Length: 496
Image (cartoon, rainbow, N blue to C red; front, side, top):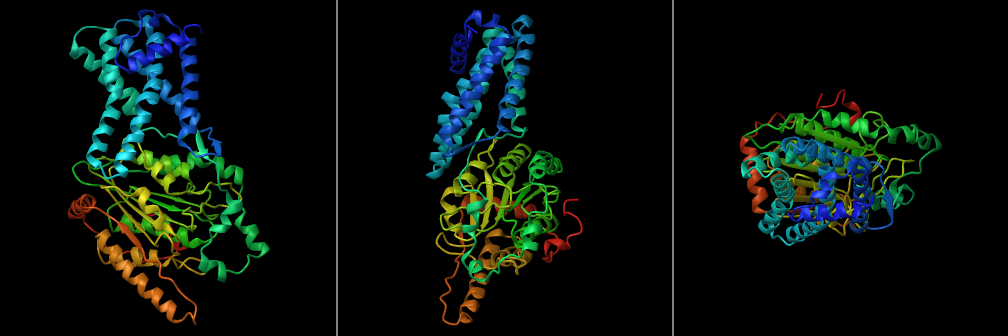
């Protein structure tokens, strides 16, 4: 392993378009394994810098690094064969993997933060240009390396680099990925504090029979089954249709304590599949004891994997993502993620923003957050190509959840009523806001002296996303209206 430091330096040189040493091509498989371990440690270090403590190690992140390393090995084998240097496969693979590590640390990581900072300050053009530089850097690394490995002219080097890029980068975009670290902050023990104010005053205590019913599943088996359940859901995603903007929809029902959130998530699937042409492009993530064996859970990991899978299937310049989140919210702007007794982490604005940082990047997005205090998500999610709608102000509760409700006020107004009258998401929000205000005023008139603060749904939009949605609507052949029914009445999933 004495050549490992030298190989890492060669990888840094390659990441900066410099030639590695000739001696680097003579190392064996042991050096490749050593670089792989360094890759794991560097990935863990970057995760520690990017993830607020306390940390929770995610074992599913290890296969992510291993898969990337194996794709690099395949690309190295192809480059070595094309260069007529079959005996240098391990050397080529070791230097390229070391270059992957160096590029991630020296190029991709700082540039990704710069892109986020520019986008957050509405410098969309600069952010886009910098993102193109970040994504194209690895191709330039492969181009310089291929030319050094077999100096047969630029066309040969370009062809080799394109082939290696297709294997080590383009193929990577289509694969599920998971971080090595997550924030292990809030779990279900403290999640009860997130119950909305209106429910906290009215809800009756659960009976022992109800408590037993809520936990009537094998928690360990439920977690073990998640990769297969999510893979099955993602495998049903239909291909993108070239030449027209497709709508991809993700519905997220975070709280298993009340069916109202499951009702909304499954109605989102039914409504957008039948009326808005998204059949085959909808994924539902939900926490509910009735669907724990049939639906993937609504948690950050599944959300991240789902968005990454959709990003790999959609045309980033053409297609639109609609993300609908429905659950309880807290006054410190955390979304309740709960399926007792599973220890699920809660989700904040930055967590959603991180999940949306896919490769390739999804440009056009509509994000709906239906929860108390959901206005606190606007600033973290808004940009020039994103429309953000929330059911309440950052300092207000929303209404209509609870064990006796089938659908929230905002869900009823926006989904069940407005979107059955218009295909314009912006117009539907405006209609929904007026309806919610009217219903809350009626509640206030019957409150017998109790002060009832209006939720005041919020929206952040831009001319760019409005124009994109108008283009999508022009190509849309809207279906008939879709009446709302509580989820237990669905006989089959809308996508089947």
